[in-house]
Length: 486
Image (cartoon, rainbow, N blue to C red):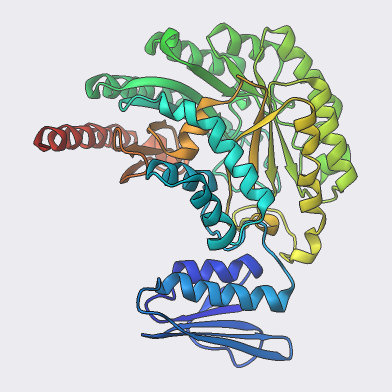
């Protein structure tokens, strides 16, 4: 399938509306002489969509009113035609954005009545009532967290771009520590990361920022040796005022590199929340994705975390992994619930070109994925509540990723970063600092990027430190603008 777009209104939204139905479609400049394609054309007063699917050629055209949104009306025309001809009904309708909950927050902030919010989802986007109810419930739960946010709050993220092995579905920038060349990078990387975190603390102080949450992610942070992990976490404890944090998370995700010693170090140096991520409790599916551990190893790692004193644990599961079934996924949910973690995050498999997962991208191959997510009612029955949600391009059946938590155990960092309500200062290779204008939800956001790969991060570290000036420049502009306001 190829996508051909013509006219000023035929842009990003039209392209991604087509991808709701044909995720693997390629964008083309000219109509192909053979094969399937969808053509979307936006003229001054008319819209036209042409679809060639197999041996069938069909089209839709419509006049556009003078007050109509040209981009939206073209997407509606395309959506209706593709839904009719493919028989698919995307659960999130025409929505192409990754943050549905944010739409609710924005509408409410503008004074919209609840009926208007509902109409936006059900009529404007053609979202199903079930998905709207999910998004609205999350928005309701998040509201007091967002209302309590201070304009000068921020969070800090430290990235560890190393793993014991690479999972087949993974698209993150991460290197496996199994080869000698990568192992040689880890210690200098940790040294530089500690240095960058010191610079971040100094920058935050000069800008008058209050650090609310701290998050060490990856990759797999526990792929570090116990000594390296202790070096990093003891440096953080000396550099930051941990007593002022509302939350401190460390991803201890994989049992093949997370032992009792590392779990004790994480607890000793102040972490208040960890992740132990099974993805599945099926040994067969674990082998399919390239994991070198068993479901029992996950259970044993969880028990070790409890014995080390961890009382706020998240577990990730993925719906749609190769070889999994609805019954198998339900078993994984039941096993996770039986362990009684404070958080369970359910992701839908996303196929990305940077991953090693070799699967044909056909919706018919994943008919069970929606049924897997339907089994999340088990979480609700067990007392978990959905508290954050996001979507990704390439996610099977246009579905979502949802974090579930016991009441009062919601991960604040996940809410802050997903709803973009305050600055995230990011350290490490591949880090992206996200600067948010204080006090203005969803206004202009600026980013400062670190180098992507560990070798480049180490070799060009001086440039990383120099870029910290951009944070100060951002807040100086904000202060100047504030003083100029009447």
